[in-house]
Image 1 (tube, rainbow, N blue to C red):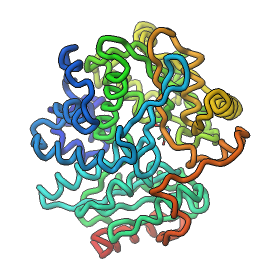
Image 2: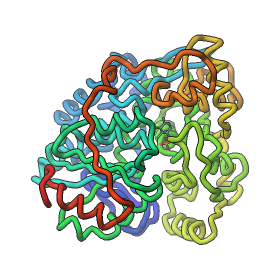
Image 3: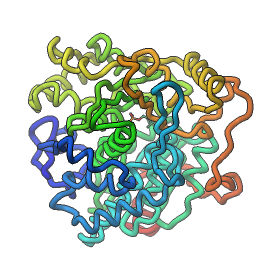
Length: 469
Ligand SMILES: *Cc1c(COP(=O)(O)O)cnc(C)c1O
């Protein structure tokens, strides 16, 4: 499989190089040159497969030529073997033809484990084959950091540096990062905010001299391997609900358009998805595009669903590429103008094309808490605030009551106690067994000033299994 850039100028790469690449050299994002397409018979034959075997069949074309079948099978079995539930991604019924797909059974209790558990193992496999080591630098406001650290902790060839804003992440989220101990794991608390952390990551990618030749790898959702891993659970859920002989709809809590873009790809690969609902919080740039063809930058509104607090959606570019007939020059022009003006809209027929599949809703904090309370009252089931946004959007935007509606359950409610408390449903949720002693574990973290040089010096002093590069 070859991968091309959404801006049309960077060279095509194979899977291995895309895994290590991050942004393309022309500023675009990598996408498969040709999407695999499965027949109805093929998809039907996968019914009942264990998660890792389904994952092998769905993702095999994407890694072809870079990873052998035997290696890929072994990696997938290991990856999904660490999930707490035997079904890996179980479905729970909420109402008539309405289901939550529980994507929070992994080590850090959010859906990001699906991609980052795999990414860590793929990186280590490719790097040991090449005899290389890399450094990962990432910024987090919570979920991404812990999932990335958990995914990389066993990697012999990766040193990971995760920056979080000092004293500005929840205690559960901080401890999920800082209690994972290892020579190659480095938590940095920055005396600044999330944007300061992200700016330092960006600046480090732009000028990598401090790394003395060691390659820097990205783990945010622009990394193609993360999107790829997320395609699988759409197949997994739909197969259980009657696909490919019956269509299924999905409602997806989203910020960076990563998770829902994976659903869009599943549909283009042959899975009968009749509707995809973009569910946002008050940071609603995606909703404003889907409902009114206006993708205009707004200020940031902190919310009770912080993992979706964004101003622009990094993966939206991948959809724009398809909407423009995969014309990289057109996408580059559009995004250059967005960078200059903060505004973007597309021609009417392209927007109408998107609307054939996508609907959307923006849900504020008040409605989020009301939905947590409503569902708890109906069923006793406790939603996290991100998933609650998905449920609200599913109930408002649903096109057909006859078809199953699947809401992606992106996090466990224990990660977001504030919203659960505000919803007034009584007792706070408890940590699952594998994290029960989280508050007793030893923490390891370095506090650094909001200063690029201090961070880069720290990385070069510790980037080789804790020793200097
Ligand atoms: C990251 C995250 C999201 C948003 O994911 P996107 O890929 O931006 O769509 C939603 N919910 C939770 C809990 C998350 O951690």
